[in-house]
Length: 280
Ligand code: HEM
Ligand code: HEM
Image (cartoon, rainbow, N blue to C red; front, top):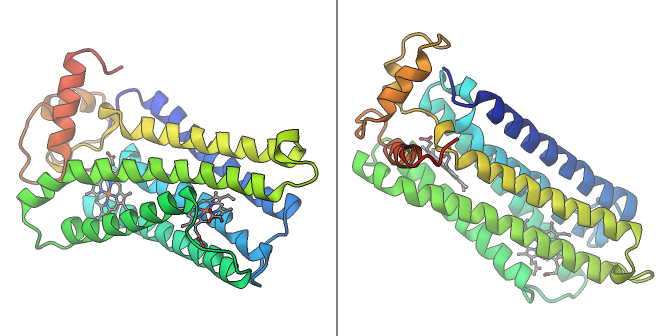
């Protein structure tokens, strides 16, 4: 299946995966080289699971889960299979987030530190609760086959909006958490004196922002959207030069009884933006 601006897509995807991978290395180096490492002992090493699992699971894995429908080499896979992958990665990210929260609550209780006093914790817990709601609604509406088609289609813009809103909130929360930890943890020299740990972890924060920015870019390009099932079925041979043109024609159709969930909306977005020359 031909994709518009395939090289740009590949560049953006490689950049996202590389930056996400480097962020994972950075958070591991932070806890192992600058901090106490990882353990489950009620001490600081237990707290350290919190940033590690949030960055690797709730940020990196969630980001990949969000763009998984956009990978053109998966367009020949069934939509159901892609739903399982999208839902599966999101469930895995949620499990990481929950273990990460258990670690920080357990650490606080063991050290007699109050829970839920900071803005970071308020926004963070709200994001995790909304994420669990998004998961339950996603499974009920898009995986369980009894949901009526009109409901699937009607809910999709909200699903996409809330997914992106939660993802952005999680990144914001991570930045607050990183800043708090540096202010609490750095004593001699202090954060304001820019010791090597502070600079290193500031870079981690910047990497997380860049990762989020690339994921949001990929997932908001109308021309990189997974074509509807109707379009895919109308193209018997993938990879021939005419596929892109055929896809363009089919994309202009507004109703899709085979794949009601959201592509109509994407097509409308796509059509409008392309008409007004906003799409590259
Ligand atoms: C505490 C959520 C990332 C540092 C907390 C708490 C929550 C939370 C709900 C409250 C725990 C309690 O009261 O016992 C999140 C979420 C994140 C995230 C959803 C998603 C990215 C991070 C990161 C760091 C961090 C990357 C960096 C070290 C902290 C610190 C605390 C904390 C220092 C204890 C102080 C406080 O309660 O604000 N986090 N966190 N967090 N988190 Fe995070
Ligand atoms: C699409 C987020 C869980 C089904 C999307 C999109 C986002 C998103 C941002 C837009 C993707 C794109 O435009 O390419 C999330 C988040 C979830 C979650 C954050 C977890 C908290 C689920 C679950 C299902 C599901 C459990 C059940 C199968 C779908 C479907 C699409 C979609 C069918 C439309 C894909 C397309 O037609 O291209 N999701 N989602 N989502 N999601 Fe989810």
